[in-house]
Image (cartoon, rainbow, N blue to C red; front, side, top):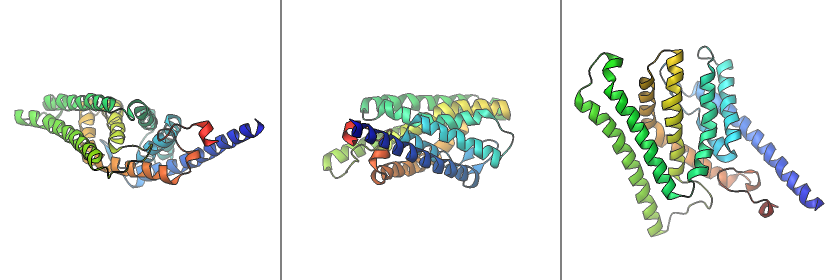
Length: 271
């Protein structure tokens, strides 16, 4: 019994040391990416600063992910400020670290839930875009042609239909030819894509527009639509990078000190 508890506490200590070290590296990487490898403007930010936060969330869970997100935003804001500090953006960064792991807990391994989840958030994004195009003349004082008001939301809809069909066909092909070796408890590309989509709707298209409206008086739907366009342009690249990193980490990092979303740790099995 004494040996059991000794091994138990050693395992917990190894977990804590790894989590702290990994989180510190992700905070530093997040600061570098958000300030030196990103395009920052008054209206939007294009970059990969949130990737380390999402990676931490997937590997270590929502608590560590949230801490990394909030910490990197605070450090970046005070060491390399882009303007006056506003706590709303720190809340966004915190949620970027919480949401991915919670989404995976909800949908991982359940194709039905994944489909329903995808439909709901696709609908919400298209709804935001439709509202923007319908009210375009109130923002720019220029009337948007009717065909543009129809084609823009329809283009978003086609994009999401294409994403789902490609995922469905790839899964079907993999089952038939049986040459696609999936990591035993790893994550699929589609699961990680759902994490990004959830963050887009709840943070970039909902909370961020509120902060921008409060701070720089940018209309809500303008920020929301801009974030949707950025998502369409960068989502595949971002999700691909995250997919590679997550599944590589599962293979490289000792399994006794990883992970939250990739496996359910069984104490008896590990000991």
